[in-house]
Image (cartoon, rainbow, N blue to C red; front, top):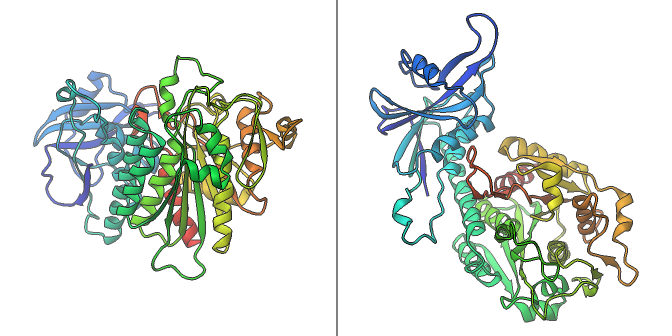
Length: 505
């Protein structure tokens, strides 16, 4: 994992990263390239002419490498359109730093000198560079020697290098980036090596190292205690299901500390069960545990940052397979707490395991004095991708204030979420003639129907958010900004920031 530090001394790294933008307008001042080097003065004579000759645009994700006096490489990373104020949002800086870091595999260190208006902008640059310095080569054999290691050392050049507040922000960035990387590693691990049991064991180890309390319920315990959703989804697989519960209680907390619960969908592989998915694209279903990875990594980051809020993270874990013991269409199961569900589609399985965990999370929270909010995170529906694409996640809720707080937080983290409704007229489509509910309803608006299903397992007076991250959790296109191909780690940063916001509210 890369390290990060700030410096105001002479640059020692062989590589210098600066920004490149383009202004647009009329006259001589219009449509010009600009090199944005923050607090570092560099001689741009000849550079701009060369960049224009090369056809540089300064667009986002454009990275250009040039030899330069005093450095092995001068790396110019696109900042996009330059406004009159020459100011850039934290997310633009985060993505530009990430794109540059991604391009520097095989290099040991680089100094980043990008424009900024605040210490939080500098933190965003650090976050982007750390997020971008990622690689996943664990399962390479003969081709491992051909793969270059990610950038190992990140320096920020700034006149504010001695600021204690900045150092704290950089420490925070490193903690979050480490857990984003852990999330990505889990998502990228093949199902041959990541089962419900191995997921639970790995996260138990990580959580204990962070000083957290861990409980793991195994198959027989789940069955005895009435977790009908998790056991029904997992019963078709030789790899038995688990329920992972990680608890964080701040040592310095006041008696009236706020309490949150995070619940993440953990389907370590999803064939669709007896509603078998098409072969094309099924390999990406190793990412169907992205929600569980996000919530468990987030609670570890929260603990390491010593945020003054109590958190319980719940990861219901199962493998949805095809066998003679798999749940059949029309089977009726009983969710933890007693509600019966007619399983019309075994491929709508994520909501079943989440239902168990949502009810249990609220039950535990009530025993401790009540929850201030509960958040579930899931790669739940293909309909999310149809509605919002592959980079924007959905937010559904029973509490507008809670959603507003979360969306305000995402403006700072840069993760893209969009509010979606829970139309009451769709609820009737979940009615069953033989059980309390069915697990599917109207196909049109399927993302919203799934949200309505989950809402049935949350008390109306408990603020609840449902985050559908189906598209953004796994990037099967081109890398962009600080986002690699494969697991992205989406939601970790925002969950940590939500906990911080809750602690100070």
